[in-house]
Length: 120
Length: 216
Image 1 (cartoon, helix red, strand yellow):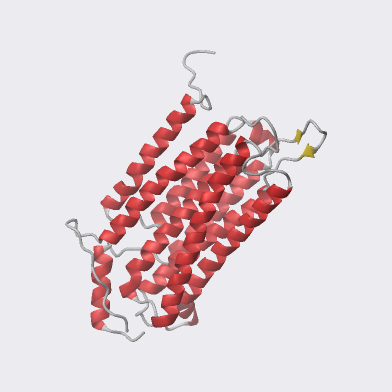
Image 2 (image 1 turned 90 degrees about the vertical axis):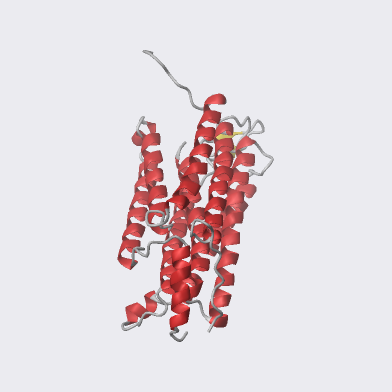
């Protein structure tokens, strides 16, 4: 497509209207993020094949933390939430938190999670 | 040369289309967390097998191995993660379409068609893995109505697969536009919206992979 100043101006206006602050990361950040995501996935699968680790208390929290880390990395860097307008962050995290808290409440309600207070 | 993009400004100064996709993604979070919660509530409550992580012998003597295939699913997870990388590169290529491409690397990184193709192909590959998995499960005796695990598993992963299918169709439509008139910076917001949807589908799978496949 030929370069057209008017076209570029519209693009800039569109990007601004999109709420971007024009500081999106480039190829060097994107491939580093991909490598980190791959390493975390390999770590998760590797952990799954170690019976002593699977049987230990740290296995489930470790997997949940690793999964949460991957989730946050994709949302921040690939979905550009780190660089975008605060309103988008609110539109995403608000429903996510409400849904997550409702889900956790349901798991307690149906006995899949149990709170233990005091010794024993 | 395409017609200038129509703007959809709101009183916030932000584009209504981008606000809409984030609101949609927020509502999709609620949908998928409800499906994941349902899966977790039913987890371990199936009376008959096959089971996800345990062996089972039926009353008539048939033996069932644990049904989940972790190596296959790990490969499909990797494919979906790489599709997200291809998608951000497609968006960057569209945003930087007007920049000069001096080296071969610049031309490769600046090819929106290449990265959109890659994303769509990787998405289709993921769907192929899922079709293989569903088919093998049915052959091994697990259907939507076999037990609580089958019902909640097929509903959750089936909904996700439907979202990936919609994403692939969206990507193919962007590719058609790119071949027809070329995608340029004026289209960046439209590609960005498609990319947000695609990455969301990826993050949902990140959670499903851990919660359904890896945690016993």
